[in-house]
Image (cartoon, rainbow, N blue to C red; front, side, top):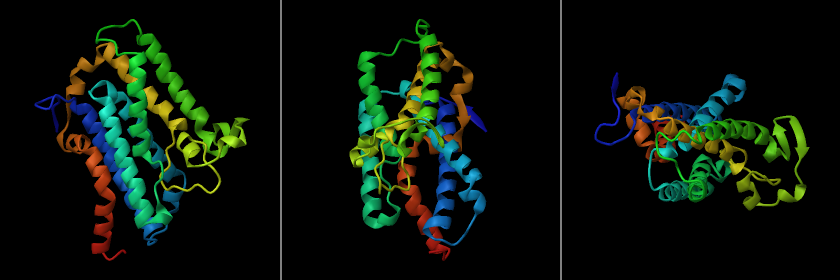
Amino acid sequence: MAAEGKGQTGRLMFFDTVRGILLLGMIGYHAMWDLVYLLGHYEYTWYTGVPGMIWQKTVCCGFIFLSGFCTVLGHRLLKRGIIVSLCGIVIMAVTAIVMPENRVVFGVLTLIGASMIITAGLRRLIPLRPAGDRTHCGVWAVICAAGIIACILFQGTMYGYLGTHGHPLLYFPKWLYRNYVTAFFGFRPAGFFSTDYFPLLPWFFLFLSGEAAGRLFRGMDWLKADIFRKGIRPFAFLGRHSLLIYLLHQPVLYGIFMLWGLH
């Protein structure tokens, strides 16, 4: 059932709803990952094949793009970026200690937090235009498209080249692939391992594309449309608390599997 969007919280429920749906998709994907890889009880070829990859990419790309888009809707971007980054660091530390064979290094929270911090710095150079100012809307549209293209072109960064998977356009110097510092930027060294790896290259370009799309929508006054004021309350609730749910969902899932005797 659709409900009015801003309400007492001043939020646009449409975006909370979309985030909540993506969150459910992520929880479902991770539940399958636990069953297939962590607990080893099931073997689903569709999950380990192309359908599973499409599922993962759709959810992750949606989260990253929406996170960039929503930077124009809130305030204190630097503070939020620091909080999300710290949550990502906590996940890295906990997984390295509790299950080092399935550790998360530079996961999606680290990426989104770092992207928020970088974007907050960029705003000092390129401040947001007020709603209704269409002067730079064409520029934001071009940046949005260019960000998506750049994200596709830099998909091969972790494999040593510029280009999409298996289609190198040029190779990067090997000295870039040195250690965990370079891995954060996308230049993954030999022996690096992470079950959830989202470096700045190429994924910051997708975040930047979402930021540009948000600026375009704001500049064109499209965010005033009624559709963005409405949403589906249960999904919107999940979307409003997505960070907390993200931090807790894996322990909860594992607890459920233990109760079912799947440990």
